[in-house]
Amino acid sequence: MRWGWIDLISSIPMLEFLRAGRLFSIIRLVRVLRVFRSLRVLVKHFKKNRVESTVSSMAIITILLMIFCSITILRLEDVPHGNIKTAEDSLWWAIGTVTTIGYGDVYPVTTGGRIVASVLIIFGVAMFGTLSGLIASWFLGAKKSKQRKGVNI
Image (cartoon, rainbow, N blue to C red; front, side, top):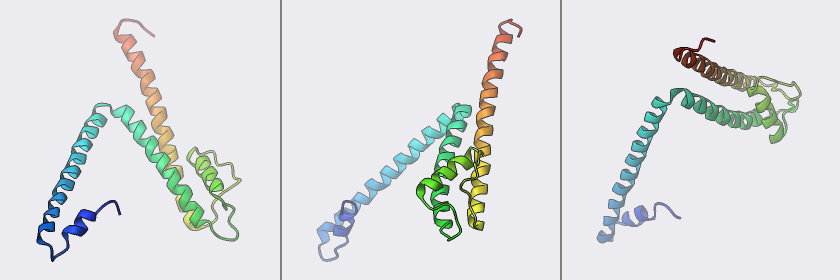
């Protein structure tokens, strides 16, 4: 038991001097407030670098969603006529689905699995749309900066 032992000791009603351990709860509250301050700095960074932070956020969300969906699909497709049987199959399915390739070798057969697949397809299209928009804005930004310097393209 690593955490909470001070709370356990301070809750003993017979020993009055151990109740001072409740002050450590205040220290934990200060830690939580420090996390909120760090979160505020992170939000400021995201507001300053909107384009890069949007792509990074979408990539992180897509990877987490891909992991979540592969675990979910493995649980949902536990039916006799399903063809996603192993974790390797579910991860292969998730990668193929999020990249919108969809080879067709593994696919969901249950209604819940198809709903999960639909969510993953939508996020995959959004991720690649965001990425292509970023690349286009970089190209257009370079073109505009050259036009300002007097070089016509």
